[in-house]
Length: 86
Image (cartoon, rainbow, N blue to C red; front, side, top):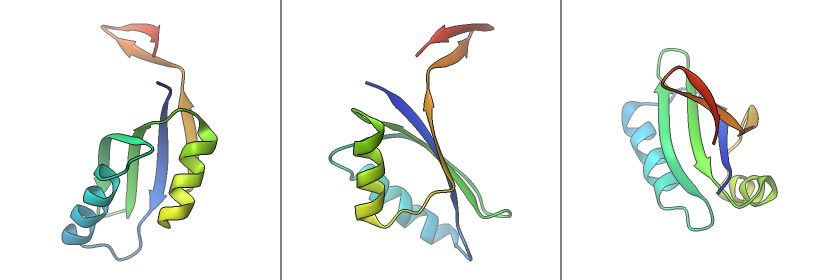
């Protein structure tokens, strides 16, 4: 299934708030959250998703009220120092 990475700006978010957002992401039914990375100091969150397509992910993010700065489809990643298709 295609993978995507999204960047979110989080204003005034506490650790408990980040835990709550992560739980909401994990409970998704039409998309699958693979990983969440948060920087509390800069108020940024990266989320890696699996989704059938970009439109499904964009619709889910919109319906759930998750605003994002950008959304990137991942086509390749490095494994063992070599770039390979995802």
